[in-house]
Amino acid sequence: MLSRNKRDKKEQGMNGSYLDEVTQRLLEVADVAYTAGCGLNTSNPWGAVTTYPSSWLQVYVKEGYQSIDPVLEFMSKGSGAINWRDLQGSTASLAVMDRAKEFGLEYGTVYSNTLQGLKCSVSVCHKKQELDAGEIAVLREYTTVYGTMKLRAGTPPRDEQCLRYLDLQAGGASPVEVQSILGVSGRSVAELKKDAILSMDARSLPQAISTAMNANLI
Image 1 (cartoon, rainbow, N blue to C red):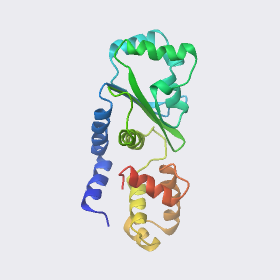
Image 2: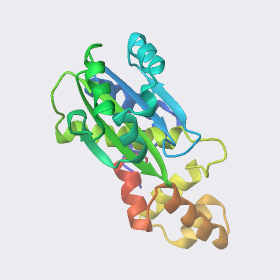
Image 3: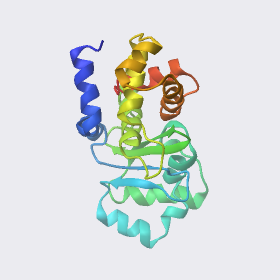
Image 4: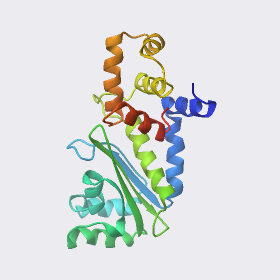
């Protein structure tokens, strides 16, 4: 049903090496530094990772910039991509960006994604003044895969069964074939459909399949 290449990518997605692959592509874009996190629109975010210089992080925390940082604001509430220079905010918040330049953090882009109603976002600092469409696509893919692999405990999982279900549906499998291959009842298939759609933050099965395929999860 899947080509060998897609099947290999799917298997990589299951064991985490696909996240490593996507992270390597991200590092090519974020050739200065990057920071990412999940659940940034909640009171309990998780999965935070950063390669920003420690000298900047120390100043950032000491000065309390997290409460006025326009980058963090967009990561928590924004949607899609925005260049650092186009961020909106108060004079004080935008001053954070000027201070960051003192630490070699001059050009950057933020991408904010929403998965299952929860934010997974990345902010990358790069040497170019502006990223192209292909590089923005890398940010989108990274946030999708990172959000998939770094789920918070207790969150409905984007587990292998959901991905297998979407893979089968993408290949045109009948309900009977799905039941047989996955070893579940008809009622369970219906519930699995709901879970699979929710797992891709989609409104319909075709959208869920498209999202999973675009992220190379199936």
